[in-house]
Amino acid sequence: MKQLIKIAKVLIPLALAAYLMFETFKDPQRRRDLFEALGRAEYIWVLISMLCAWLSHMIRARRWKYLLEPMGYRTRFWNAYHAVMSGYLINMAIPRLGEVVVEARIVDRPNRVLVPGLASEQDRPDIASGRVPGERDEEVDAGLAAW
Image 1 (cartoon, rainbow, N blue to C red):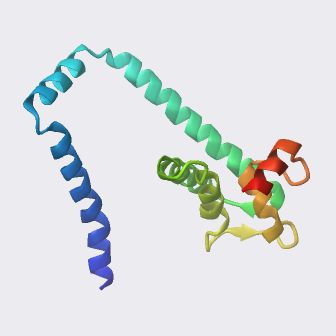
Image 2 (image 1 turned 135 degrees about the vertical axis):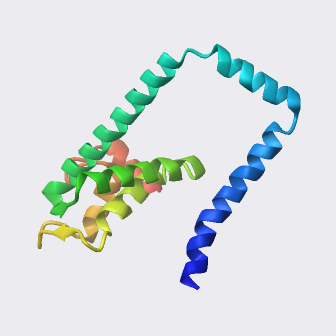
């Protein structure tokens, strides 16, 4: 059963992607337009923008790591990076939910190191708002109250 679930986790997204690609490009004119546009593109700008985006994700992961350390949560950089990337993916489906997902992926890891007495359940809204506890402003408080 577990093997079947692992296979389904791979095959279902691949099948969905293949179906969506087929539906998008089944018209020959759309395929020609795509290849013409790809031929005219200046790939140096694509490369530069990809590098800048990747660097911003790395910086954001480092920021999460530093934000959580004073609260007693220790995590490896790559765990924070993958949590940030998961948050971006979730934000595409449900806007503003990504911050909660980042916190959940970092804080709720079974192998995390928690310094006793420094972090608790009441810190979670501060983590989700991206602030250090006690340093929230009125806009954040109003947003959390509305949420």
